[in-house]
Structures are given as structure tokens and as C-alpha cells.
Amino acid sequence: MLPSVIPDEIWRYIFLILDGLEDQADSPLTREEMIGSLSSVCRTWRDVCTSTSALWKHVTFDDRQSNVHAELLRIGVSLARSNLQQLDVSIAIGSSDPSILSLVVLSLADHLERVRKLDLGLVFLDPPHSPRLDVSTWPIMFALEDLTLENIRFNSSTEFHMLLRCTPALRTLRVGGLSWIAHLLPDIKRETMILPLLREFTLDSYVLYTFVDAPCAMPALERVTLLNTEYGLSWNTLLSRLEWEARPTELTLSGAFPEASISAVLSFFPTIESLVLYSCPADVVHLLRDLPSSRIPALQHLTIDRGQLSNLQALSFLDGPITGAALAPNIKLHVRDCPYVSRVVGAKLVQRGRATFEDANITQGELLAWVANDYAPFGLRFYPSKRRHRKPALTGHF
Amino acid sequence: MSITLISKEGAQFLVSKPVADRIGVVRDCAYGADFWLGYAVATDDSMGITLANVTSSILSKILVWCEHYKDMEPLVDGDSNMEFPEWDMAYIGHDMNQILFVLEAADYLHIPGLLLLACKGIADVLDGRNPRGICDLLGIVMDFSHRQEVDMDKENGYWRWFLHPT
Image (cartoon, rainbow over the protein chains, first blue to last red):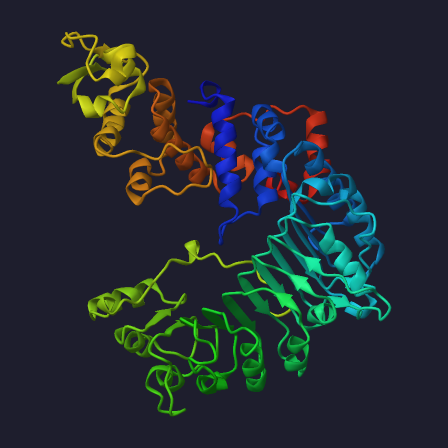
């Protein structure tokens, strides 16, 4: 019935659609498996696959999936077939051999200029002893927009700053896990670090140390995410020494932030319009005391995402029975995937008109029951899990 | 104004101008280069336009799509990650045989929106299948040489169990 009559260009387009489907959650195969599967059907399909450079722009290395040599070979094949496509590179190293990072970086060395997205992470290593990332020979990467580093060690802040100077087009920077960057050397000249296009910055406390003594200009910064918050660090000290030229509008705090830390952090971001507390502790409701409109006048949205919020605490955000103070009228509350907040309470929150409630775990039967009980008019939002696609999280703290 | 379309089997379908406008080949036949001026070159449409490569069943299915989109623009953007409306996905279904015929006809009749939709439908059906499953579904014979199989083994050794799971 087929495929000779269907032009190669159409198959090429279908393969690209399939490649895009792999970005969605719950896809049965990984991207590499899908491309490998398509190129093993027949000669025609293999020729179409190998000649479609866009299918090979995703370069991955994961030595937990197979041995190092096979992964390095696969990197070479992808780099060769991707021609001049901009690359999305994802490197995850699980081995304790420190030379593997060097090998992988070496294999990418000639193609760094066309890397658009670089995700580099060590999985199981202890940061002080993890291999060092040497960026001294890296070229200026004009295409790099998205950089994620996890458990990577730099010998000094200067090296990290050197990396950032190679990335003038950077829009998203995530440095998480326990990336270990030594303090700025005392005799280093203070030089303003400019990231003109950076919009999203995710970092943990160790990385924040590297910015303490270096002024930064990030005029386009919109979103800041602070990780690694369960450690009893003095955020107040760290943040007060930052010299950032930035006015972010969205702040995400992830982890078991101590209550005092939340207050300290908020006072350094007076321009935020949206505050997201991800996986926050149960006593976060006391945060209400720290949210007077005079301190954060622009705040419009407070999101509790996967927190240990109870029913009573959720309601107290709007009514204030626990704290004696409720959210300011102009602030909207968003409760997402909090397992201890029941749907009945969620419906009540939504009914007030100042809150939204999302629960990914609702089943089809429950949904039908809700509809039957006329809960749908309350504005509860349901979504199928297939469509639910969260931003890839840094494994260390999410 | 209406136009008669004649399928491969000789069945006649009378369609209105907005419906016929969705079919590039028909539009060109009926209006020629003066389509954009808004009047027909061929004033006598009683003879009809024969679509020799399209069967009646597929033509009637295609006309359902054209009827749906007679008053609105379908998606014609070539972005491979675009999402189609629910109606479109329900229309195209999961019957691979039928989707292939629709795709072939859409290519022949020059209906870009339907062509993209058929591509999306095929991609959805193929998603998650291993090479053996795809061959069985589409009736393709694996025609690799021994050398190509060795090359594939080297490149993709970790997923070869899909081909030879035992």
C-alpha cells in the first residue's frame, strides 16, 4: 500500500514531528531510541534519517545507559550528521572516572560555537572531589542560550566568570546541584560581569558565593530561582553583598527554606510580581506576616507548588484564622499539587475568586464525580498527565 | 456557484465554491491564474473536474475536511511541533491505511493543511513503535545489507534489542 508513492520530503517531515513528540512527557521511547528505530526500518528511511540534520541536533551522553565508548561514538555520529544545525547538548556522567568529563568536552571542542543549549551534569560525585571543568580554551559561544551546570567543580570564581564571558547570548543559566566554585581570589581585580540577555537565573548558595564580590549587570533578568535552601546559610549576608543591576519580576524559592530566610530573601527583591514557593515547608503560612504590600508592592501572585500545606493553612491564606492576617486583596493565591490540600478545600479557595487550584493526580472517575456533583463551575482546572510537561528540574534539589 | 468533482470510480460530488477553494488543484483548474481576481475563467462547470487518483471514499472524506474549513483558515504552518485542534485529530483518526491514502490524496490535490494533518496522524500512530512493528504496520521489507546492519549495531547498540529482542 505504500511507501514508494510517498516522497522522501514527507517522510522527513513526519520524522521531525516524531522527534518533536519525544519532548512530551510520557512518551514511550527516548529521542535516540525513536530515531534509531526509524533509521532501522529500511534503506529508504535510513537515508532520509541520516540526511536530515535536524534529527541529529540533540547530542546526548549518559554513561548510565551504556558504556562510555558507545556513548562517545554516538556523540561523534550526531555531530557529524547534524551538519551546521545548532546543537542541544545534554551530558550526564555517572562514572567516578574524572577523565570522562575531559573526554566528552574534548569530543565537543570543535562544535562549541554552534551549541545552543548545554546541559552538563555529574550524577553521583562528591563535589569537592569531582573533576574540574577547564574552560580556558573554550571559544566565544555566540549561539549558547541555555546553560545548565550540575555538580561541576571550578577551581576559582575566576574560572566560572571566564565561562560566562564566553556566553554573550545566554538567556537561561542554571547552576545547581552542589556545583562547587571556590571563592574569588582576593587579589583578583573587580570586574563587572555583563550578561545582557539573561532572563532566567537558577542558582544555589554555593554559586551565589561567587557573585558576592563581583558586580553583575543583568538588565534583562526576569526570573530568579534560589535552590539548596535547606542549608542554614546566612542568605541575608550573601544577598546584601550582591551588586546586581537587575530587577527580576518572578522569584522561586525551592526547598526547605527556613522561615527567617524567606523574609531575608524577599527583602532583596522588592520588584517581584510573582513569588513561587516550591516544595516549601508546612509553616510557610507564617509568611503572611512578611508580605505586607509596603515591602513588596508589586506582588500579584503567590504560588505554593508541591508544598506540605494543610487544608487549614491553605484557607488561612485567604481568611487568616491562623496568622491573624490574610493575603492582601490584590494578591492571587495559586495552590499546585499540594497533597494535603483536599479538593473540597481547593474548590472553596477557587470559589472565593482569588485563588486557583491544580491537582495533577485526579483520576477520570473522580473528575466525573466532580462534574456530577456540580463542582466544575467552581473553576477547578484538570489536565491530562500526557500534556503535563514540567521544566526539567535540577536533580539535586527538586 | 458549484463545481462537480469526479472520483476515480466516476462518482460525482457537487461542491460549493468555498469548499472547492480548499483544493489547490481544483482551484487552479476552475479559476486558473485569475483566481485572485475573483471570477472564474471556466464559466461552464457542468463537465466537472476528474480527479483520477482519488477514490470516492477518500474524496468524500477529504470533502468533509474542506467543508469544515470552508469559512476558516486551516493550519498551514510547517512547524513540526504545532498542535492541531481536537476536531482535526478526531477527523484524521488512527487508521494508518486510511491516513496514508488521505496523505497521498492531499499531496496530489495540493491541500497543504490536510497534508500536515495527515503527517501528524501518521506520526502519532508510529510513535513508540519499534522497527519490526513499523515494518509490520506499513508492509515494509527490511532491505539492509549486512554491512549496514553492522554499522547500525555500532551506532545504536543499546537499542538493538528492539530488532532482536531475544
